[in-house]
Amino acid sequence: MVMAAADCTDLPLFPLSNVLFPGGTLRLRIFEPRYLDLVRECSREGRGFGVCLIIEGAEVGEPATPAAIGTIAHITDFYTLDQGLLGITAEGRNRFHVERTRVRDNGLVRGDIRAWDEERTIAVPAEFGLLPTILDRLLGQMNLPARHADRSCFDDASWVGFRMAELLPLAAGERQHLLEIVDPLQRLALLRDALPRFQRE
Image (cartoon, rainbow, N blue to C red):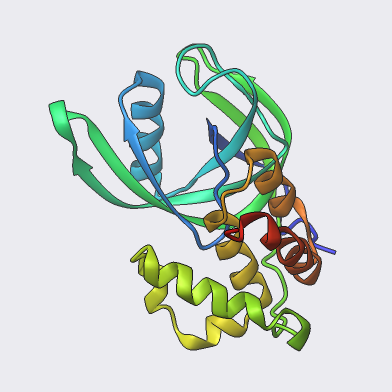
């Protein structure tokens, strides 16, 4: 069971239409004032922000309703996009549970969150041995940075499960379910069972 790592912490939230997993990479185009404020705050204080799947609403406009389980993201890079917009790259860290939310005057959603501990490291059992091989092939085909990860990562059930969950063409709700699972072997079992859906005829 994943337990809360700390007492409630106040965190700005960034509801999105997709799911960020621990160890994953997120690239965002920032243009709304509320999210420019979020980036300034996180940069000034050296803190992360919470990424949650949108349950109701949209990424732009009125504040959206976030899922109760999300992932803390830490900004790792800034860059300028077309038309002078700000782009950021962030890395997923710990998952968290949102205890309560509130909306600031600028439309930014903030949450009182409890961070979860990292999942325990479990070797990938032989029954799931095909998953690291498929993951390695997918990372190579898509030319993703994770293909350069230490080979020991490919024997870590959590790492393999999170990477597979973000790469397979799953619905957002399925990804959210995989994020919320606290047993890495249960996550691998669901991913293994989902694979036949994506095999070519």
